[in-house]
Image 1 (cartoon, rainbow, N blue to C red):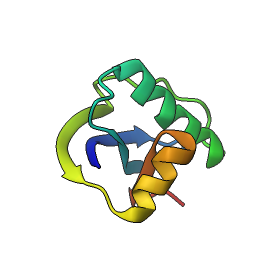
Image 2 (image 1 turned 60 degrees about the horizontal axis):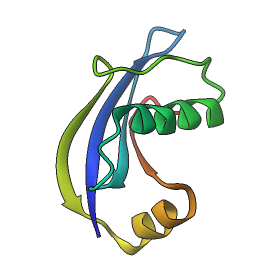
Image 3 (image 1 turned 45 degrees about the vertical axis):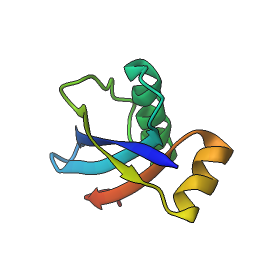
Length: 87
């Protein structure tokens, strides 16, 4: 499976910037759907709801998915790779 990688940055209330990637099937082109996955992730981290846009979340590239990523996408539609300040 090929996935689209959306590079995402969100400023937290403590002024740190969270950096994470949202991975979705490469045929998913609806930006609002990708942004909703980012909002779901932020909610799971107890980060106050932030509105994501192309300012915070941009398509980066397409990559081949690992088995772990494929399983997560089949289960919930997306996979998150935490990069910086996600905890």
